[in-house]
Image 1 (tube, helix red, strand yellow):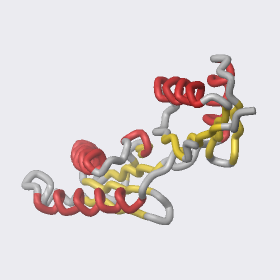
Image 2: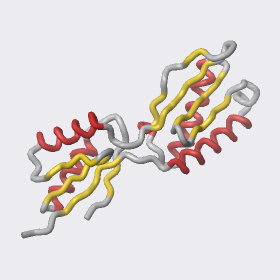
Image 3: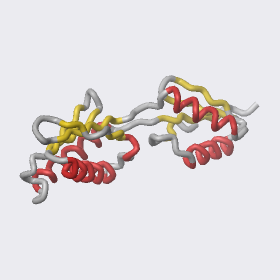
Image 4: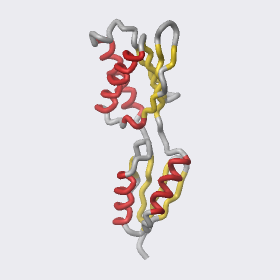
Length: 165
């Protein structure tokens, strides 16, 4: 009998790269002529995995988010991993927008991926293990087909395929 091959479907973020992008965006906001004295600022809470943008107006907040997004893209962070909330009124006329970093696959998304893979009738087993999925099959070709299928679908967050053996 052939040995079982497997891989894991995970959703992870390199927090150090997010921190680097945050530092670069902070520096650019301090130097850009249209944002320099606007009172806009960003904060990164590594423990809470949140990015907070404070700005005097919604338009300025969107500009700061665009600057931060461009830095995240350059650092290899998928923008789908940051879920931005609605602008909230803060002190004075300013607004605050909080973005939370999505890491790990929640139960609902894992169940959806599991159902989709089983609906395609691949000869593979899918096991939900906490915040990741393990897909195993005797055929490596089947695993490649599963990877291509999952990449072709949108599950609302970036997915990585690790531990392929």
